[in-house]
Length: 86
Length: 389
Image (cartoon, rainbow over all chains, first blue to last red):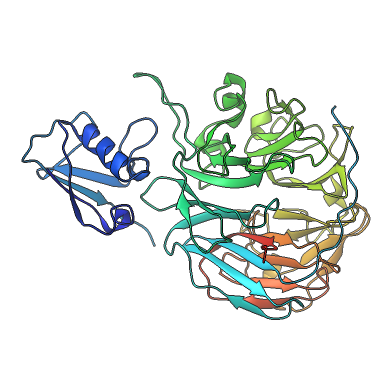
């Protein structure tokens, strides 16, 4: 499936805005991204396996609340940084 | 108390200095000529990232660590082994233990403080975090693990208090200090949560708060209520520490455990509230502070809009004002706890960064000051470094 990468994280993906990754849950996909791009996962998921407060992840236009969110092969995953403040 | 061999007073350094400047929107360096008269500002590094601390490893003078987060991305540490030319991210940044389902676990919000370990422990570093945690790396900052038991200790967790007990942008573990005579003799401080000491290499820590005052009406015996802002050990006499606290300026002469409020000797109109504390590299009787307005709602700016450092040259018995070169009025500066430092030249150079983005320097131990950079983002920390050639 294709994962949309926000600009703040493209330093990890060699500036690619989309990458192809396989996985049956959101957690699996993020773990695979971390293998490919070390450090990626911890910037958006805490050590308690929670999505960080100013990060939003959408799966097929619905916001995913947890890493166990199931994904099918056609899922579209958007990682979004919720910018706030000055 | 473990006090091994005495150290000799460090020799004065000479040559060009580099200031490592961490700001709310990236990192910068300022490099001087050998006379420290002219300074050149670098391009921003990690522009837009929140950089809390950038430190050179004095053991090789090439390795640098930088504590970084952003408004939305989690915390990490970047490492350079070429004096800041290139950077690589830590593969395992400081993180608390993952708890079991149903338990309440802590999350590192940002790494606040970096301290190289003892000179005899090359490649080892300590890190203090917000919320308060103590971490160590033994491979030059590539991977980090919890250090000591305090991150999980129920008593320490109680002393750390909650987010409401800490500073507005999160409670912080800071002022990690290694006794230059003995790598097992350690200090750290927590805002809030007091000053703590270990004499067994971090296996155990004990509070070191006797004599420190807390906010009026609260019990100073309660560790949580203590709010050290910055603690420094004197390189020329490691048995002497100075501290700028939320409630005054203190000195501690070991083996005594009793802090003495030397800020009582500051001018009454100025008081003894501030963030940073700086000690002389070769004279343990000399220390500098940068007082701020701690009245009413705590404006935390220069008193009356007139910035001034103060120096003691007799261990806190008397203090002198140092404001030559600073604006005479209408300058409402805040200098954070990591944003005032010194070099080890003779005379000592002093440096401070303001939250309004200015760097001020003195080549004369504070007798006169000049602005060497302005228009930077809000400055969080300034470190004076001598890079290897």
